[in-house]
Image (cartoon, rainbow, N blue to C red; front, side):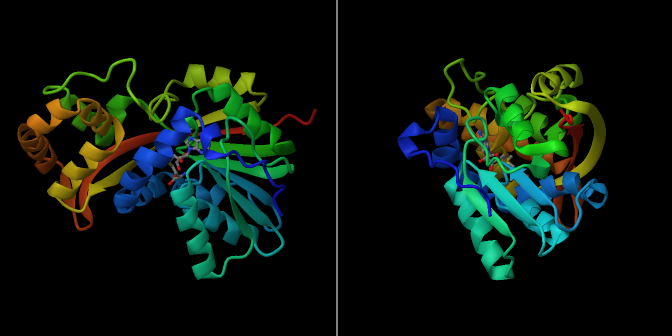
Length: 295
Ligand SMILES: C[S@@+](CC[C@H](N)C(=O)[O-])C[C@H]1O[C@@H](n2cnc3c(N)ncnc32)[C@H](O)[C@@H]1O
């Protein structure tokens, strides 16, 4: 069993954690079909070769709806176990329900802010899919992940590469910015944001400062579904991600220009690839692997 973390009360949450719970969780739940489906493309490319075996203890940081934690639980089998950690109650509710419905008993889901504390039980493997880019203090979060590993244990985190190779997130922002101002320095956000770990040199330095060795970067390109249809894709872009942030922060100005913004987005989205599952756009991530030194 995972060693219990001292529960933080809601009024001890950072502004970022409050933002995830209060503002982003309902939007992520509405667009779960886009997010889980899209993000899975990037973990599917590496899951077959992850250094995880039967009996391992695994920690999944920023586990969201819990799908990767459940997949890892299957991998480690009845003699291993997985702990999924997230700062957002609503996502953990989904994860726990899924585990119950599927009869998975070797997984535990805990609420925690990874920048503050993680379970300390010498995990063999620590994983995070698109969670670490939101750490306000990335070295602190990465260091906590390193501390959670046994000496010699491995970690893998997946983060977005640069904007240019991620039109599924950047294209809509560029369009919305033709109508609305960029968010100010006082914007309410979920942390540094999706591209904060795009620069290999900077992230390598963060990883070294956090205590890791043997750091490697592998690029994964994958098409992602951005909506079932054009309308769904527009709704998604105006709710979540960089375009959603511009739209949200512009408040009443955004609402007064919403028709024109939607029309411009529709024109651009209609030109994207339309597959059986919906509108498809390109995305690109780094899969970053590292080891906790033996001493
Ligand atoms: C983009 S979502 C990815 C979720 C999931 N890993 C996936 O791939 O579907 C980022 C996740 O990180 C969580 N998160 C952000 N900051 C966190 C923190 N400081 N501690 C724990 N979880 C955090 C969010 O609540 C959210 O579930």
